[in-house]
Amino acid sequence: MNITYADTIPNNVDLGSDKVLQRALEHWQPEFRKWWAEMGPEGSHSADVYLRTAVNVHPSGWAHYAYVKMPEYRWGIFLSPTDGNRQINFGDHRGEPAWQEVPGEHRANLRRIIVTQGDTEPASVEQQRHLGLTCPSLYDLRNLFQVNVEEGRHLWAMVYLLHRYFGRDGREEAEALLHRRSGDLDNPRILGAFNEKTPDWLAFFMFTYFTDRDGKFQLLALAESGFEPLARTTRFMLMEEAHHMYVGESGVARIIQRTCEVMANHKTDDPSRLRELGVIDLPTVQRYLNFHFSVTIDLFGADVSSNAATFYSSGLKGRYEETKYDDDHLLRDATYPILKVIDGRIAAGEAPALNALNERLRDDYIKDSISGVGRWNREIQKAGIPFLLTVPHKAFNRKIGPLAGIKLSPDGRIISEAQWAANQREWLATDEDRAFVASLMGRVNVPGAYANWISPPALAINKQPANFEFVRFN
Ligand code: BYC
Image (cartoon, rainbow, N blue to C red; front, side):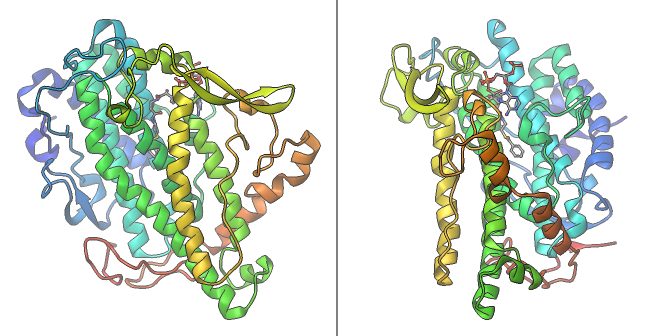
């Protein structure tokens, strides 16, 4: 098969002159297309979608807008520019020049990190593949598809690293990324949250708000890596990630706005009355929030992790904003506060800072996610409604790490198994909640029209009006 690399795969890695890489991609690209046809957005293949495509890394080139059929999207490979003088900023190799090739002794760990990162990208596309059938507007449909093609590009970014730097085992891992399936019992995706369902648009917006934000923090930690190709590719991915979180934050905000409008118009806060009126009541929003937040903070791994210590000491994965820390960047003697479970109670404790790096990143993440929830609350306050959305306690509904061993209410009270069983329905989205939200989902595909349960956006995309034909069906 002939591939004109410069045309079909925009890149700044001089793909055209790398014969080994070309051969690897000749095998992988058709497999990727097959995967997209099978597992990519359902019923979307012939639509013209108003999408941005990164065609180069310059400010004018990383967001080029045009109508595109998604199977023809030009998934590019971009590394952020470098001045060639970067040093490793942390760990045992601190002060040495950043690696341009994979250091032999860290090869297995580096591959594992890249594979784990790469695995989440197709996983999210699989999780979201049915959502286009129930879009609340063409604007939202376009945003969904934008997120999907960019997750596809992020998969390409990791596959590029595997093919270019890891030889045969890299090629095998790249293939396996197309074979695992979200939620498949026999061959699931690697991390828990990526095997959950994203069955409706409230779940989608919560996912892009909370889980894509895990992407932001993990990518920021990898952007500190001593392996420069990984640092450079993740820096570029972060530019796209920002839009995904915006889709989530503004999507939830628009749902809240619409609910508050109906609450005010009908002078009611009764969830069943609001459901009859076709909007999503705020307690249901809270239960979805609790679920997505708790499942996502598990993605940071165990509170105390020898893997995390090794990744840091060997210069593979840094802290969020590593260079802003005024310390030794070795962390051999430092400690970090963690929560411990002692005799069924939670107590403040300390762990060696090196081992607690997952916990530190989780804490950074939590601070960042709380701020957006504050903005949702301002929407509710503006409408004069006395309701406050809250982020649950860090130990609520955990499945990873020692906190998984206890039962806790969202506000942090230790409870018995029986109390958990009795109250769980108040705290986490139930089958009834999901069935109700699903009952609202119906496809709205007329330009400028929006489903009853969500407000139109204040600003559409690329300065286009809200009634722009963001997707044309053929
Ligand atoms: N589910 O020592 P620990 C994104 C495993 S999202 C299942 O704490 P470590 C995106 C762990 O693998 C960002 N298993 O682990 C968002 C280990 O397994 P083994 C994704 C889990 O290695 C939206 C064992 O438990 N990127 O980009 O320190 C849409 C012991 O744990 C989970 C990355 O994650 C879990 N939640 O930390 C699209 C960055 N957590 O060795 C995209 C790369 C842990 O016993 N990954 N385990 O078999 C990493 O840096 C690390 O692998 C982790 C785990 C932070 C995930």
